[in-house]
Amino acid sequence: MIETPTLQKKHDRLTAFLKAFGLRAVTSADAAGSSSANLFVVGDGDGEGPTHIFFRVLGGPLQRSGLAILAAAKIDFGGAANPLVGALPEELVFSLEEQPQMRGLADILVAEVENSRCGGGTVKDRICEIIVVVAVRRAIDQGTVNAGLLAGLAHPTLHPCLVAMHDDPARQWRTDVLAQLAGMSRSHFVTLFTNVVGMTPTAYVTAWRLALGRAALEAGSSVKTAAARVGFGSAAAFSRAFSRKYGYPPVGAKRTTEPRPA
Image (cartoon, helix red, strand yellow):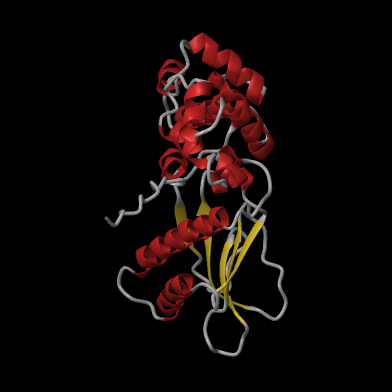
């Protein structure tokens, strides 16, 4: 009898961040970019097309001599409020020779930049958003850092627990349930999670809830609604935890943060 191999369940490690914090690209009108651009498609200046993609996660100019910027865009992925953005390296760099999927996207983007067509702005913006999603996937798959959220998402046994917390933040997660998802004992799970992610599972789920709560407040939710949505038992408990984390009460969230683009 031939046994059919059991396929490992795939876990979506990005959708929760996209839903909570959004992703928006605005392509620069000038192919050379602008001071606010943080995604760059570049070539080596020989006219052979794009060779690399640079994503400067928290912004800042591209400082590379000898490279021609063929397309550029400003990417809004929630900024520092998005825990994933804070976990990514300052700059992600991809050689298109090694990434054929990204090379195809870059070629289409550059063609749209060089040839103005109907609906071109929308096409360019959407392509840039896809490029960013693919870039972040690569960063997670490659285990770009050794500790923190990105390391947890890349970890073969821990990432299902993180995905579960991200997808269902309002659930009252118990450590033994998370350990069961990871297929290990409670003590082993807590030790491994803390070493890899940099905080205990309980501290992590609280931090995730607060990040989501802040995003909800910025989007216009009341403190009571935000607290209930992310799993706090009361608005008072949410307010206390929020104030400890961010240094100001949740009612001041809108006043202390810049509005994100609609």
